[in-house]
Length: 241
Length: 364
Image (cartoon, each protein chain N blue to C red):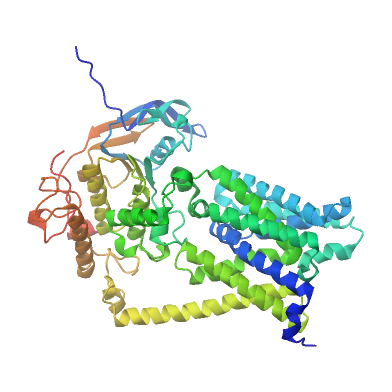
């Protein structure tokens, strides 16, 4: 009888419990996100969505249970370069660096570092991927919120991550910029097979691009398939409001 | 006031030493300053320089070289700032205030036990024209070490200054780099405190960087311009101090501030000229319509107008369409989809080419 080899999930939470000052965030919650999925993580404000990303990045440790990324517990990970992370906003938007420099910051350091020319080429390619080639030499402080988010996405992508974590990346963006960002993410997921876990409140707008929806409620995680449908046109008056 | 002849300035050994030390410090202080300013720790120089005074006083009381006492105190204070900052990450400036308070308190108490007050006072405003052989060698060694380490860790320090969390994910050894940088900062402040003065060193860490940030169009340029301004203010300050018999430390700082004011004025004028040029040409500016009719409501460029409540305006939509089409051009082969599908997430479908909307895959 042939042995069936199950694919290694991109992200798994195995009976994970976590609490902030006695307030439970996750209560023996379990989750499995197969590789190649575009998962949306939703839940009410304060439910602990961002904390889940922090658990995956091992910025905080679980109280019990185990969080694994590509089959390896995060507590035993040493490198994080296969995981891309995009926050709601850049923490230092007025930093005096060009878009290229910001992207180059995520290239390998030490012995694995690229030559100056190779680093420039890699950054240019990542910026082109998100449609920001024309802003490569501009200071990030001169970019709009949407443009800066795209540069930060290029920064995350330049290391060719297998898993992309996004924490409400469209917060503060207008409808057109949101759609453009979702389009880029959908392309990455579809074409390159990048697994995406995105915290969002924009379930209506983002769901057409996703493949599964995870809802965090009362410390438990509920998973369902995404409802695929044609996305709405952001230029229609009813969507603009 | 007697004005000395400029021609004889560099014939004096004390002025030669002052220029060597001043220029070396002007090369390394902005390297340290750029990172501290961008990490929102501008006042760390102030805290460390006050603590260095405590180290000086302790050294004088204990009969140890005061510069050595200053270095030890600064290193301890640097780690203390880092330790406190990690415990109060959202209010990191508190760490500086606490260490500064300790430094001032200790310096005040210990200075009461110093027998020769003139020795102690020379550290307050520095004595760059009275550098000993030991201090000259110390400055050379520290400067070379700072330049070497800054060169090697250039990208790591830039990444750390930008975002510690992202730096860690990028593979930067945040803790190790923090320790190295703290030691470098402490060493720099300690040796600079002896030369330009403890009360002045924090200004030298910040003012040239503030000027460099006005001129630089990238992080690299900011570092380079900060160094250029620091060197300029050192040369102008030392020369002015020599010519008019002024205190060199204070004159160097005032020169740096004067230079900063000039840079502000020049950059403002340049920005105005740039805006006029953009309004005159505006061909490459996709949001040009806002320059022509500011206040036009548009959600697509809400960052440019506060009146945006309605949907995106036509010029912005055309711009987004063009951007999406540009992306699609890189993904689609001419005449069809690269992978044989007729839809994709980033580019318009064939029947929506004019519409230009991002469309999710039809099936997966």
